[in-house]
Image (cartoon, rainbow, N blue to C red; front, side):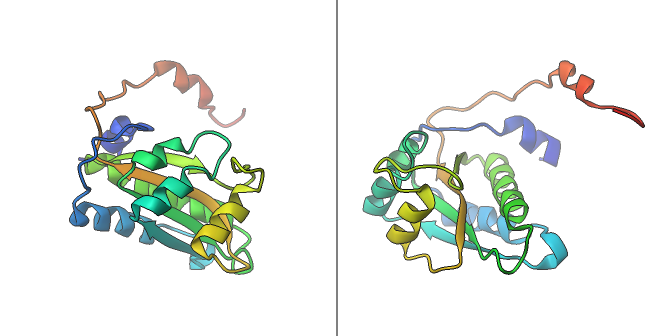
Length: 174
């Protein structure tokens, strides 16, 4: 499968079958994240893999809404970064997340990006504070996002290319 095929297959999947993700596939998803480009190759990010059922249930409360799928996930990858290492930490973490989502799609694993930065937890704390407390993330690391992972409940069809998007491409000038 090439990159465009993986992009066409990628969906935000929030329901999972309950079948465990084979370790070899999870390793490929992590490798895709670890191979990500970063500004000046600083690689300010760290990846926290969560498998523990109780921890995933707790993580499902990290947002007021939009994180409930973690309660049914087989795993989650929490992406944090040290902002003192790179002023491009947000972009660097986003590249990691996108690469892991593409590999998940190519490997037949369902995923959903859960934004953490600048979001609120169900208990009123910031999502960063909630996750940092739960996972013992030290300062100065900051949360960017969480990738929810599980084997898909159902096969998602390939997304057709929307020709209207070509109107967003400009030649030479806006």
